[in-house]
Amino acid sequence: MSIAVTQASGTLTAPATRGLVEIRGVSKSYAGHEVLHDVNLTVQPGEVVAILGPSGSGKSTLLRTINHLESVDRGWVTVDGELIGYEQRGDRLFELKEREILKRRTNVGVVFQNFNLFPHLTAAENIAVAPVALGRLGKSDARELALGLLAKVGLADKPDAYPRQLSGGQQQRVAIARALALQPKVLLFDEPTSALDPELVGEVLDVIRDLAKLGTTLIIVTHEIRFAREVADRIVFIDAGHVLEVGPPEQVFGSPKHPRTKEFLGRVL
Image 1 (tube, rainbow, N blue to C red):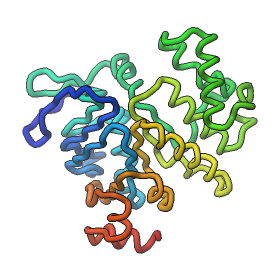
Image 2: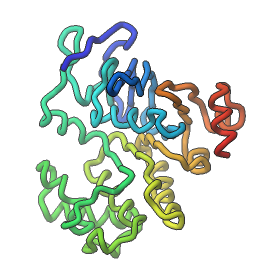
Image 3: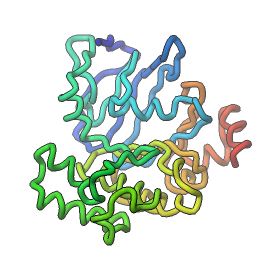
Image 4: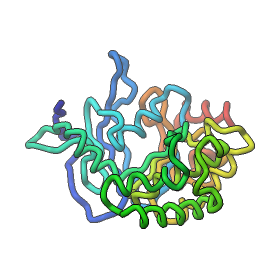
């Protein structure tokens, strides 16, 4: 698969930063239905961006294009100037082989809605498996890393618990620790609390709040409006595949510029 690099998509560069995400001219369709339309967005290193919008607006699809869980039809996405799923040859982008995609994808951690933990592995083993498989750490060092990350997410007493022995909130915190194990430049959260019982939401949001203070670039698709207002540096509102508004929380929530943003917030606030 190849994609033309057009002038409208901008120029590919390689800045010396950590966690700079550039989305240029990204469009994506399924069966003739366009779910993303010419999306342009820059997320600065260490910035926390919350993506809001109604169901089916393209929020999760946009998130998944960042680490090439979804391919794009037009445009490109880079992290620190590096394409995740493609390489450039002349004026076209060519999709990489899966092995190379996986290698580049380690720079972008993802926390999904439904945890996706390995049921046959303990909490510590779920965290340690990727660093060992990629040859970054031996088993002993990976175990030590896992214990430290479990402590960071408030689960120091659960290293040998299996997912079935953990609550939904605890499983999601293990999933966050697992995403951190490869020291990604960017962390993506795809509605990380949507599968949780209401009383468990707070413990996961507290962990994300702590991460927001550490300087890692965070991009969060969420329906937790109060949380987005509190944690995010900028809010992105997307509807029908179009980015309609981008701004600081006080502007987007207090004085939205686009009528659709105002209508949406009027229903959820």
